[in-house]
Length: 403
Image 1 (tube, one colour):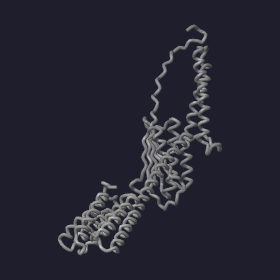
Image 2: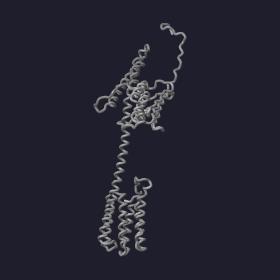
Image 3: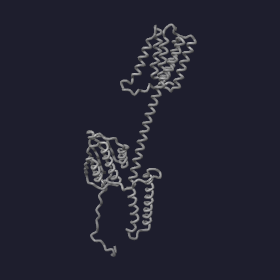
Image 4: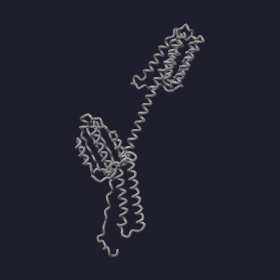
Protein backbone atom coordinates (compact mmCIF):
# COMPACT_ATOMS: atom_id res chain seq x y z
CA UNK A 1 0.00 0.00 0.00
CA UNK A 2 2.96 2.31 0.49
CA UNK A 3 4.47 4.21 -2.40
CA UNK A 4 7.95 5.67 -2.65
CA UNK A 5 7.13 8.22 -5.35
CA UNK A 6 5.59 11.65 -4.74
CA UNK A 7 2.22 12.61 -6.11
CA UNK A 8 2.12 12.88 -9.93
CA UNK A 9 2.64 16.46 -11.14
CA UNK A 10 -0.50 18.31 -12.12
CA UNK A 11 -0.99 19.72 -15.61
CA UNK A 12 -0.98 23.26 -14.27
CA UNK A 13 1.37 26.10 -15.19
CA UNK A 14 4.84 25.47 -13.81
CA UNK A 15 4.66 28.14 -11.02
CA UNK A 16 1.46 26.51 -9.69
CA UNK A 17 2.48 22.84 -9.76
CA UNK A 18 3.78 22.92 -6.17
CA UNK A 19 0.70 24.74 -4.89
CA UNK A 20 -1.02 21.57 -3.52
CA UNK A 21 2.14 20.61 -1.63
CA UNK A 22 2.42 24.12 -0.21
CA UNK A 23 -1.23 24.04 0.90
CA UNK A 24 -0.70 20.72 2.66
CA UNK A 25 2.32 22.14 4.44
CA UNK A 26 0.39 25.25 5.53
CA UNK A 27 -2.47 23.07 6.77
CA UNK A 28 -0.02 20.98 8.77
CA UNK A 29 1.47 24.11 10.34
CA UNK A 30 -1.98 25.43 11.19
CA UNK A 31 -3.09 22.16 12.74
CA UNK A 32 0.18 21.85 14.64
CA UNK A 33 -0.56 25.16 16.37
CA UNK A 34 -3.96 24.10 17.73
CA UNK A 35 -2.68 22.50 20.89
CA UNK A 36 -3.92 24.06 24.10
CA UNK A 37 -0.74 23.41 26.11
CA UNK A 38 2.85 22.29 25.57
CA UNK A 39 2.00 18.58 25.55
CA UNK A 40 -0.88 19.09 23.15
CA UNK A 41 1.33 21.15 20.84
CA UNK A 42 3.98 18.42 20.73
CA UNK A 43 1.32 15.84 19.89
CA UNK A 44 -0.22 18.17 17.30
CA UNK A 45 3.15 18.73 15.64
CA UNK A 46 3.85 14.98 15.53
CA UNK A 47 0.41 14.27 14.10
CA UNK A 48 0.59 17.10 11.53
CA UNK A 49 4.00 15.81 10.36
CA UNK A 50 2.25 12.67 9.10
CA UNK A 51 0.21 14.89 6.79
CA UNK A 52 3.41 16.10 5.08
CA UNK A 53 4.80 12.55 5.04
CA UNK A 54 1.65 11.41 3.22
CA UNK A 55 2.74 13.45 0.21
CA UNK A 56 5.57 10.96 -0.38
CA UNK A 57 4.80 7.80 1.68
CA UNK A 58 1.01 7.74 2.11
CA UNK A 59 0.83 4.14 3.34
CA UNK A 60 3.42 4.68 6.06
CA UNK A 61 1.90 8.05 6.95
CA UNK A 62 -1.56 6.47 7.37
CA UNK A 63 -0.24 3.92 9.84
CA UNK A 64 1.73 6.51 11.81
CA UNK A 65 -1.22 8.92 11.83
CA UNK A 66 -3.53 6.27 13.23
CA UNK A 67 -0.96 5.37 15.87
CA UNK A 68 -0.49 9.01 16.92
CA UNK A 69 -4.27 9.45 16.88
CA UNK A 70 -4.66 6.56 19.29
CA UNK A 71 -1.81 7.87 21.44
CA UNK A 72 -3.44 11.29 21.67
CA UNK A 73 -6.80 9.77 22.60
CA UNK A 74 -5.31 7.49 25.26
CA UNK A 75 -2.48 9.59 26.69
CA UNK A 76 -3.94 13.09 26.62
CA UNK A 77 -6.76 14.02 28.96
CA UNK A 78 -10.06 14.44 27.12
CA UNK A 79 -10.62 17.76 28.82
CA UNK A 80 -8.36 19.38 26.24
CA UNK A 81 -9.96 20.25 22.91
CA UNK A 82 -7.81 17.95 20.80
CA UNK A 83 -10.49 15.88 19.11
CA UNK A 84 -11.19 18.17 16.13
CA UNK A 85 -7.66 18.52 14.80
CA UNK A 86 -6.87 14.83 15.42
CA UNK A 87 -9.81 13.70 13.30
CA UNK A 88 -9.05 16.38 10.67
CA UNK A 89 -5.36 15.43 10.31
CA UNK A 90 -6.16 11.76 9.89
CA UNK A 91 -8.87 12.58 7.32
CA UNK A 92 -6.29 14.59 5.37
CA UNK A 93 -3.90 11.63 5.43
CA UNK A 94 -6.68 9.35 4.16
CA UNK A 95 -7.40 11.84 1.35
CA UNK A 96 -3.77 11.80 0.21
CA UNK A 97 -3.75 8.01 0.49
CA UNK A 98 -6.87 7.68 -1.67
CA UNK A 99 -5.19 9.83 -4.34
CA UNK A 100 -2.43 7.23 -4.68
CA UNK A 101 -3.94 3.76 -4.28
CA UNK A 102 -7.00 1.98 -5.73
CA UNK A 103 -10.38 2.69 -4.12
CA UNK A 104 -10.81 -0.68 -2.38
CA UNK A 105 -7.60 -0.51 -0.27
CA UNK A 106 -8.36 3.14 0.50
CA UNK A 107 -11.86 2.19 1.69
CA UNK A 108 -10.37 -0.55 3.86
CA UNK A 109 -8.00 1.99 5.44
CA UNK A 110 -10.94 4.33 6.13
CA UNK A 111 -12.98 1.47 7.64
CA UNK A 112 -10.07 0.43 9.87
CA UNK A 113 -9.63 4.05 11.00
CA UNK A 114 -13.35 4.42 11.76
CA UNK A 115 -13.37 1.13 13.63
CA UNK A 116 -10.34 2.24 15.65
CA UNK A 117 -12.15 5.45 16.60
CA UNK A 118 -15.22 3.50 17.73
CA UNK A 119 -13.08 1.09 19.78
CA UNK A 120 -11.23 3.98 21.42
CA UNK A 121 -14.56 5.60 22.31
CA UNK A 122 -15.86 2.36 23.76
CA UNK A 123 -12.69 2.08 25.84
CA UNK A 124 -13.22 5.56 27.27
CA UNK A 125 -10.40 7.32 25.38
CA UNK A 126 -10.54 11.04 24.64
CA UNK A 127 -11.98 11.04 21.10
CA UNK A 128 -15.04 13.18 21.90
CA UNK A 129 -18.69 12.23 22.08
CA UNK A 130 -20.38 9.59 20.01
CA UNK A 131 -21.63 12.38 17.79
CA UNK A 132 -18.02 13.48 17.26
CA UNK A 133 -17.06 9.88 16.48
CA UNK A 134 -19.87 9.61 13.91
CA UNK A 135 -18.85 12.91 12.38
CA UNK A 136 -15.21 11.80 12.23
CA UNK A 137 -16.14 8.54 10.53
CA UNK A 138 -18.22 10.49 8.00
CA UNK A 139 -15.22 12.77 7.46
CA UNK A 140 -13.03 9.72 6.78
CA UNK A 141 -15.55 8.39 4.24
CA UNK A 142 -15.84 11.76 2.51
CA UNK A 143 -12.06 12.08 2.27
CA UNK A 144 -11.71 8.63 0.70
CA UNK A 145 -14.56 9.23 -1.75
CA UNK A 146 -13.08 12.57 -2.82
CA UNK A 147 -9.61 11.10 -3.26
CA UNK A 148 -10.93 8.08 -5.17
CA UNK A 149 -12.93 10.32 -7.52
CA UNK A 150 -9.91 12.53 -8.19
CA UNK A 151 -7.68 9.52 -8.73
CA UNK A 152 -10.23 7.96 -11.10
CA UNK A 153 -10.28 11.08 -13.23
CA UNK A 154 -6.49 11.12 -13.37
CA UNK A 155 -6.30 7.43 -14.31
CA UNK A 156 -8.95 7.89 -17.03
CA UNK A 157 -7.06 10.86 -18.41
CA UNK A 158 -3.80 8.89 -18.48
CA UNK A 159 -5.50 5.98 -20.25
CA UNK A 160 -7.06 8.34 -22.78
CA UNK A 161 -3.66 9.92 -23.42
CA UNK A 162 -2.10 6.49 -23.94
CA UNK A 163 -4.93 5.47 -26.26
CA UNK A 164 -4.55 8.65 -28.31
CA UNK A 165 -0.80 8.06 -28.58
CA UNK A 166 -1.34 4.42 -29.58
CA UNK A 167 -3.91 5.47 -32.18
CA UNK A 168 -1.51 8.05 -33.59
CA UNK A 169 1.27 5.44 -33.81
CA UNK A 170 -1.06 2.97 -35.53
CA UNK A 171 -2.26 5.63 -37.96
CA UNK A 172 1.33 6.55 -38.80
CA UNK A 173 2.25 2.90 -39.32
CA UNK A 174 -0.80 2.34 -41.53
CA UNK A 175 0.05 5.46 -43.53
CA UNK A 176 3.57 4.20 -44.17
CA UNK A 177 2.28 0.78 -45.23
CA UNK A 178 -0.27 2.35 -47.58
CA UNK A 179 2.38 4.54 -49.17
CA UNK A 180 4.76 1.61 -49.57
CA UNK A 181 2.00 -0.43 -51.23
CA UNK A 182 1.27 2.46 -53.60
CA UNK A 183 4.97 2.79 -54.44
CA UNK A 184 5.19 -0.97 -55.03
CA UNK A 185 2.23 -0.80 -57.42
CA UNK A 186 3.89 1.96 -59.40
CA UNK A 187 7.26 0.19 -59.52
CA UNK A 188 5.64 -2.91 -60.97
CA UNK A 189 5.72 -1.39 -64.45
CA UNK A 190 9.42 -0.58 -64.08
CA UNK A 191 10.32 -4.09 -62.96
CA UNK A 192 8.07 -5.71 -65.55
CA UNK A 193 9.75 -3.67 -68.29
CA UNK A 194 13.19 -4.95 -67.32
CA UNK A 195 11.94 -8.54 -67.02
CA UNK A 196 10.41 -8.31 -70.49
CA UNK A 197 13.69 -7.05 -71.93
CA UNK A 198 15.55 -9.95 -70.32
CA UNK A 199 13.09 -12.41 -71.80
CA UNK A 200 13.29 -10.90 -75.29
CA UNK A 201 17.06 -10.64 -75.27
CA UNK A 202 17.41 -14.24 -74.09
CA UNK A 203 15.08 -15.37 -76.88
CA UNK A 204 16.87 -13.38 -79.59
CA UNK A 205 20.45 -14.08 -78.51
CA UNK A 206 20.79 -17.54 -80.16
CA UNK A 207 19.69 -16.11 -83.50
CA UNK A 208 22.34 -13.37 -83.39
CA UNK A 209 25.23 -15.81 -83.21
CA UNK A 210 25.86 -18.34 -85.97
CA UNK A 211 26.01 -21.95 -84.75
CA UNK A 212 25.74 -21.19 -81.00
CA UNK A 213 26.97 -23.91 -78.68
CA UNK A 214 24.19 -26.15 -77.31
CA UNK A 215 25.14 -25.21 -73.75
CA UNK A 216 24.59 -21.51 -74.54
CA UNK A 217 21.20 -22.23 -76.11
CA UNK A 218 20.15 -24.21 -73.03
CA UNK A 219 21.23 -21.46 -70.62
CA UNK A 220 19.47 -18.76 -72.62
CA UNK A 221 16.29 -20.86 -72.73
CA UNK A 222 16.45 -21.24 -68.96
CA UNK A 223 16.92 -17.48 -68.56
CA UNK A 224 13.91 -16.83 -70.80
CA UNK A 225 11.76 -19.32 -68.87
CA UNK A 226 12.74 -17.80 -65.53
CA UNK A 227 11.99 -14.30 -66.84
CA UNK A 228 8.54 -15.38 -68.01
CA UNK A 229 7.84 -17.05 -64.68
CA UNK A 230 8.95 -13.89 -62.87
CA UNK A 231 6.62 -11.81 -65.03
CA UNK A 232 3.71 -14.10 -64.19
CA UNK A 233 4.44 -13.78 -60.47
CA UNK A 234 4.66 -10.00 -60.83
CA UNK A 235 1.21 -9.92 -62.43
CA UNK A 236 -0.22 -11.96 -59.55
CA UNK A 237 1.45 -9.66 -57.03
CA UNK A 238 0.10 -6.62 -58.83
CA UNK A 239 -3.40 -8.07 -58.67
CA UNK A 240 -3.08 -8.34 -54.90
CA UNK A 241 -1.67 -4.83 -54.49
CA UNK A 242 -4.11 -3.11 -56.83
CA UNK A 243 -7.29 -4.78 -55.66
CA UNK A 244 -9.33 -2.36 -53.58
CA UNK A 245 -10.89 -5.29 -51.72
CA UNK A 246 -10.75 -9.10 -51.95
CA UNK A 247 -12.30 -9.88 -55.29
CA UNK A 248 -12.66 -6.18 -56.12
CA UNK A 249 -11.80 -4.55 -59.44
CA UNK A 250 -8.24 -3.80 -60.31
CA UNK A 251 -6.99 -0.23 -60.45
CA UNK A 252 -5.70 1.58 -63.51
CA UNK A 253 -2.67 -0.03 -65.14
CA UNK A 254 -1.49 2.92 -67.23
CA UNK A 255 2.28 3.29 -67.72
CA UNK A 256 4.01 5.18 -64.93
CA UNK A 257 5.29 8.70 -65.70
CA UNK A 258 8.86 9.96 -65.76
CA UNK A 259 10.61 13.34 -65.86
CA UNK A 260 9.99 13.43 -69.60
CA UNK A 261 6.41 14.41 -68.70
CA UNK A 262 7.48 17.14 -66.28
CA UNK A 263 6.61 19.95 -68.71
CA UNK A 264 3.08 18.59 -69.04
CA UNK A 265 2.77 18.44 -65.25
CA UNK A 266 3.92 22.03 -64.87
CA UNK A 267 1.42 23.11 -67.53
CA UNK A 268 -1.40 21.44 -65.60
CA UNK A 269 -0.33 23.12 -62.39
CA UNK A 270 -0.16 26.53 -64.04
CA UNK A 271 -3.62 25.98 -65.47
CA UNK A 272 -4.83 25.27 -61.92
CA UNK A 273 -3.61 28.73 -60.83
CA UNK A 274 -0.15 28.09 -59.40
CA UNK A 275 2.68 30.18 -60.91
CA UNK A 276 5.59 27.75 -61.11
CA UNK A 277 9.10 28.15 -62.49
CA UNK A 278 11.37 25.25 -63.41
CA UNK A 279 15.17 25.40 -63.47
CA UNK A 280 17.47 22.62 -64.64
CA UNK A 281 21.22 22.60 -63.97
CA UNK A 282 23.82 20.11 -65.10
CA UNK A 283 23.78 17.83 -68.11
CA UNK A 284 20.33 16.38 -68.42
CA UNK A 285 20.47 12.63 -68.90
CA UNK A 286 18.27 9.58 -68.66
CA UNK A 287 18.04 8.20 -65.14
CA UNK A 288 17.00 4.72 -64.00
CA UNK A 289 13.22 4.30 -64.35
CA UNK A 290 12.70 4.01 -60.59
CA UNK A 291 14.53 7.28 -59.99
CA UNK A 292 12.60 9.02 -62.79
CA UNK A 293 9.28 7.82 -61.37
CA UNK A 294 10.14 8.83 -57.79
CA UNK A 295 11.37 12.27 -58.87
CA UNK A 296 8.21 12.91 -60.88
CA UNK A 297 5.95 11.84 -58.00
CA UNK A 298 7.84 13.98 -55.49
CA UNK A 299 7.51 17.08 -57.67
CA UNK A 300 3.84 16.27 -58.32
CA UNK A 301 3.02 15.83 -54.63
CA UNK A 302 4.96 18.93 -53.58
CA UNK A 303 3.15 21.11 -56.11
CA UNK A 304 -0.21 19.61 -55.10
CA UNK A 305 0.54 20.48 -51.48
CA UNK A 306 1.36 24.04 -52.53
CA UNK A 307 -1.96 24.36 -54.33
CA UNK A 308 -3.79 22.91 -51.33
CA UNK A 309 -2.06 24.63 -48.41
CA UNK A 310 -0.57 27.85 -49.85
CA UNK A 311 -3.11 29.46 -52.17
CA UNK A 312 -1.73 32.43 -54.03
CA UNK A 313 1.92 31.45 -53.53
CA UNK A 314 4.45 30.98 -56.32
CA UNK A 315 6.51 27.79 -56.59
CA UNK A 316 9.93 26.92 -57.96
CA UNK A 317 11.16 23.52 -59.12
CA UNK A 318 14.93 23.01 -59.27
CA UNK A 319 16.47 19.91 -60.82
CA UNK A 320 20.23 19.43 -60.55
CA UNK A 321 21.86 16.63 -62.55
CA UNK A 322 25.22 15.44 -61.28
CA UNK A 323 27.55 12.48 -61.47
CA UNK A 324 26.14 11.06 -58.23
CA UNK A 325 22.47 11.46 -59.11
CA UNK A 326 19.64 13.97 -59.12
CA UNK A 327 19.06 16.77 -56.62
CA UNK A 328 15.59 18.27 -56.66
CA UNK A 329 14.01 21.06 -54.69
CA UNK A 330 10.45 22.33 -54.73
CA UNK A 331 9.85 25.53 -52.78
CA UNK A 332 7.01 27.98 -52.46
CA UNK A 333 6.43 31.32 -50.81
CA UNK A 334 3.87 32.16 -48.14
CA UNK A 335 0.16 31.91 -48.87
CA UNK A 336 -1.58 35.17 -49.77
CA UNK A 337 -5.06 33.93 -48.79
CA UNK A 338 -6.22 31.56 -46.05
CA UNK A 339 -6.09 27.92 -47.07
CA UNK A 340 -9.48 26.17 -47.17
CA UNK A 341 -9.98 22.93 -45.19
CA UNK A 342 -8.22 20.12 -47.00
CA UNK A 343 -10.00 16.78 -47.47
CA UNK A 344 -6.69 14.98 -48.00
CA UNK A 345 -5.34 12.36 -45.63
CA UNK A 346 -2.06 14.18 -45.05
CA UNK A 347 0.11 11.37 -46.43
CA UNK A 348 2.06 13.47 -48.94
CA UNK A 349 5.24 14.03 -46.97
CA UNK A 350 5.20 10.42 -45.76
CA UNK A 351 4.98 9.15 -49.34
CA UNK A 352 7.81 11.39 -50.52
CA UNK A 353 10.00 10.29 -47.62
CA UNK A 354 9.32 6.62 -48.35
CA UNK A 355 10.20 7.05 -52.02
CA UNK A 356 13.53 8.65 -51.17
CA UNK A 357 14.29 6.05 -48.47
CA UNK A 358 13.62 3.28 -51.02
CA UNK A 359 16.41 4.74 -53.18
CA UNK A 360 18.78 5.27 -50.20
CA UNK A 361 18.62 9.02 -50.76
CA UNK A 362 18.27 12.04 -48.49
CA UNK A 363 15.02 13.89 -47.88
CA UNK A 364 14.06 17.06 -46.01
CA UNK A 365 10.83 19.03 -45.79
CA UNK A 366 9.82 21.98 -43.66
CA UNK A 367 8.87 25.64 -43.47
CA UNK A 368 11.19 28.35 -44.71
CA UNK A 369 12.07 31.57 -42.83
CA UNK A 370 9.84 33.67 -45.11
CA UNK A 371 6.75 31.63 -44.22
CA UNK A 372 6.84 29.31 -47.23
CA UNK A 373 7.66 25.63 -47.50
CA UNK A 374 10.44 23.62 -49.13
CA UNK A 375 10.88 20.00 -50.12
CA UNK A 376 14.34 18.77 -51.11
CA UNK A 377 15.61 15.34 -52.04
CA UNK A 378 18.85 13.80 -53.26
CA UNK A 379 18.25 10.68 -55.36
CA UNK A 380 21.35 8.54 -56.01
CA UNK A 381 21.78 7.61 -59.67
CA UNK A 382 25.48 7.35 -60.60
CA UNK A 383 26.24 8.18 -64.18
CA UNK A 384 27.51 5.23 -66.24
CA UNK A 385 31.25 5.30 -66.99
CA UNK A 386 32.18 6.48 -70.47
CA UNK A 387 32.35 3.69 -72.99
CA UNK A 388 35.84 2.60 -73.99
CA UNK A 389 36.72 3.39 -77.61
CA UNK A 390 36.54 0.45 -80.01
CA UNK A 391 39.53 0.13 -82.36
CA UNK A 392 38.61 -1.56 -85.64
CA UNK A 393 41.23 -2.97 -88.02
CA UNK A 394 41.95 -1.02 -91.16
CA UNK A 395 40.91 -3.95 -93.37
CA UNK A 396 38.13 -6.37 -92.56
CA UNK A 397 38.49 -9.77 -94.23
CA UNK A 398 35.81 -10.92 -96.59
CA UNK A 399 33.20 -13.24 -95.15
CA UNK A 400 34.22 -16.12 -97.47
CA UNK A 401 38.00 -15.61 -97.10
CA UNK A 402 39.93 -17.65 -94.55
CA UNK A 403 40.58 -15.94 -91.21
